[in-house]
Length: 206
Ligand SMILES: Cc1cc2nc3c(=O)[nH]c(=O)nc-3n(C[C@H](O)[C@H](O)[C@H](O)COP(=O)(O)OP(=O)(O)OC[C@H]3O[C@@H](n4cnc5c(N)ncnc54)[C@H](O)[C@@H]3O)c2cc1C
Image: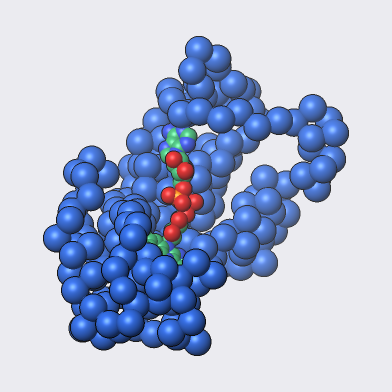
């Protein structure tokens, strides 16, 4: 069903932290704030935080996070015409509308530790050497890639219940794979046969 039709039938967004996922005989429930929501089917797509929700559904997944770092150099606008990778340091420099984006690297540091300044300094120093005209980096952030040991995502029904559908663990390529993942998830929700064999992506492969 198209999103428009879902909203016409009363569908709406609820923004908040989903907790206490519970799989029952007739529905799946989840709590957001004070309210408990029930659904015929529920998709777990909470990135690197999906492990907790999957566990509540009865599935233990080997999901961890590969933390990655980003620094924006506004003065670097127009210096590059395509993304360029500095392989020795593990990051890409990409021309963006608001400047030169230097982003990448992998840090295994879990979900709780704060941004590690040494990482952004390393990116800043390398860009200073490679692209002095890019000036100074103005903004920086760290993000949590949701990663599995074999670098494949988890896409498919929970082995415990048809009602729960997993869609997480896309690692370095979650933006790239968002469209196809959405298509596969909508097929599973509607009980259509997905156009791809989902066996390699099952949650209990480890
Ligand atoms: C520096 C960097 C560069 C990258 N570059 C690329 C790139 O060029 N191309 C590419 O394809 N990918 C790239 N990625 C990877 C990409 O960002 C991820 O694969 C992608 O964001 C994963 O999407 P997701 O929706 O599964 O998870 P997320 O984007 O992490 O989204 C999960 C969302 O769920 C929310 N959430 C968590 N727990 C709960 C809860 N209990 N209740 C409600 N909401 C919850 C979170 O707040 C978050 O908003 C990059 C990542 C980093 C860090």
